[in-house]
Amino acid sequence: MKTAIEKLSDYGYELPTARPPVATYLPVLRVGNLLYVSGQISSGEQGVVTGLLGETMNVVQGGNAAEVAAVNVLSQIVHNGGIDLDAIKRVIKLTVFVASTPDFTEHHLVANGASNLIVTVLGDKGKHTRAAIGVAALPFGAAVEVEAIIEI
Image 1 (cartoon, rainbow, N blue to C red):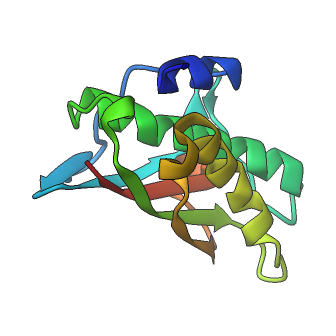
Image 2 (cartoon, rainbow, N blue to C red; image 1 turned 90 degrees about the vertical axis):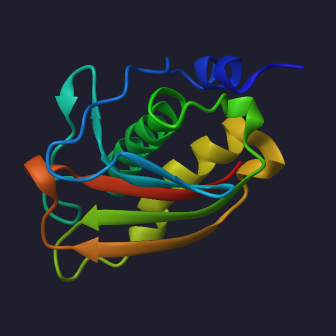
């Protein structure tokens, strides 16, 4: 059986080094058997994936940005949470923030990028509840930000 890291690689991503916080907050906080992962923006090897859904980005591009943000969530779990991805018992919830125009209504489709990656990498224990929220802007002009609650 493949490990979560191998599945992530099959999906086209390598687990990056976790990015340090850019303000006064913890990237990961453990409370009992829960990990709270602070919002991770859509930033990868090429820098921050910027854009505004409904103006400069389409749903496919937004979904790709959501994937990148979800990979960053996984990175925080491993590097700052000290948890092997295979030790995760359950992804409880993802909250996906989508920078968009006021008339954009397909936030849920953009959020599928993050959800699909998490479920592909973690299998049934990656199935989660979710909120997809449209916002006027995100830090550094990011297109998407994802936060998570994880049971370990």
